Length: 180
Image (tube, rainbow, N blue to C red; front, side):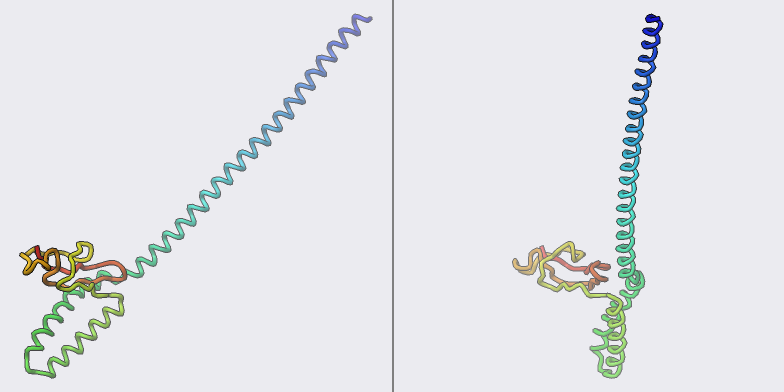
């Protein structure tokens, strides 16, 4: 009987050993499941944060674009009106030579009304004058002529057409003659 008891004890020990191993595997599996869930949670949290940041950037960008569009919405209309304003400027010069003061006064009133309306819509004159240093970022050189003096080399000799800007953006560069 001792041999039978010994064999039974061995089998029991093996079963117990197997059960212990199985319990350890289950605990290890549970830890890996918990670890897996923690990793999944971390991944999802990361995806959420990235998506949230991307959405915030999208909102900021579209808001900025909307403001920019609002500022320059009149750009096409104002560009179309600039030749009319130029014609009024030339007309004012010619009418001021005539002796008809009533005609001059009437055209001046219309000219001022047109200019004030365009200014109220955000149009500004780009200020350049003869004698200023030429800067290609703010003026367009139509032609180069020999400078009348050494001081005028690289400077604006004459302004042929006024430039205009809408907000901070130049919509038409002034056309100038530069001395060389």
